[in-house]
Image (cartoon, rainbow, N blue to C red; front, side):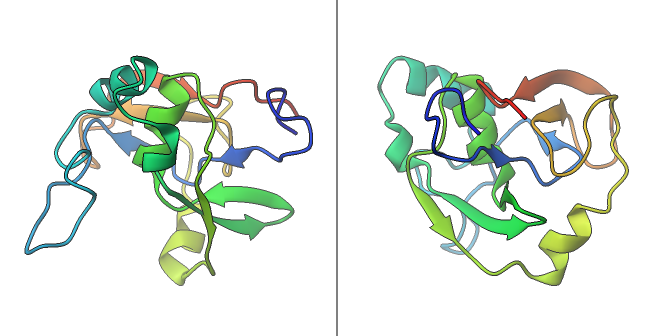
Length: 140
């Protein structure tokens, strides 16, 4: 349970890593314009400065073995790096791709899936860890 909201379960990361930046908008699809192509750390800074509000980062979640797991890792990473928890949660049914992510081997210690820690790397092929983002106030 979250220390910040005692009756609200934590939303955990469901991937072994996250890239530094949000995806760009391609052919009209992708993240909202205020996130597209931006680095997670810059979005986190805008959240801390209240330029962006946590409600603007919708987090899609699904239940897995009694835990809430995020389907959109970058948004949860930005909120977590800003020291915030999700306020705009949408429940989804996980597809095979989302579930297969939970079988990935962690690339850092103490980062089981789903879990409260996620390493930031340059790319899927360059797994050099730049930093680790943690869910704020996580308790288990």
